[in-house]
Amino acid sequence: MFIEYKNVNVYQGDVLVLGGVDFHVDEGEFIYIIGHVGSGKSSLLKTLYCELDIDEGEQAVVLGRNLLKVKRKEVPALRKELGIIFQDFQLLHDRSVYKNLQFVLKATGWKSRKDMDERIGEVLDAVGMADKRNKMPYELSGGEQQRIAIARAILNRPKIIIADEPTGNLDPETADNIVNLLKQISLKGTAVVMSTHNLPMLDRYPGIVYECGEGRMTDVTARYNRIDISEQ
Image (cartoon, rainbow, N blue to C red; front, side, top):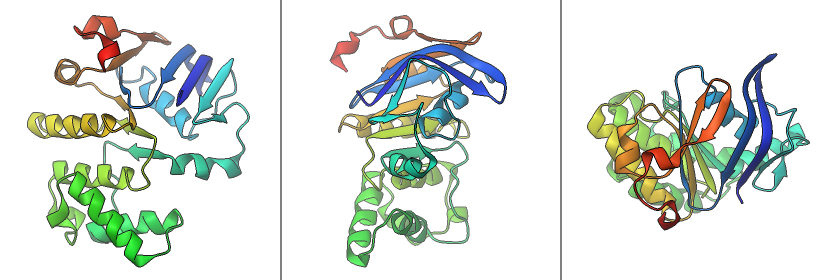
């Protein structure tokens, strides 16, 4: 099991935003987290990569780390096994696509220029952006920037991709392409956990669905999927 939360409480400061969370993610699963603004979706995602601490719960394990006891010095190693995608892309605007990706590899311990070149080529091919390697972020459309953000997220072959509203700033066709790309990545074994307001995507790209609301998180997969989830 990649993620195992049992009866976890999620706080923002002193405010309980989600109580009694039971949440499970395994290899290759495609997970949606839905709910209104302020319902706790982003807070939950932040606990997964230790941006928010978890102080209360029976169990909170991500990739074998006990988040109830994790030490700050252990967090970088956990994050290296995660790919994180944000709604606003968070690319470095003073350097090219290639330099953006190289920066991440250097920061995560890669040394060989040849190995970095090969890996950058692989991820740009995977997201259909091989011809944009020398472009600056401001020369790209929103959809292209999000594809580069996905390329950045998969550089270190993460076991889990965490995507916080990755299509929130995109037009419907581009959003569809981005979710399709994430779905294809999940079919290769990487789990994808994605918060979204884009409910039509749940029909086009079925997955496991959790809903946040009224301080709780509920598995509502049966409400949205008309197929057997065991086939996923």
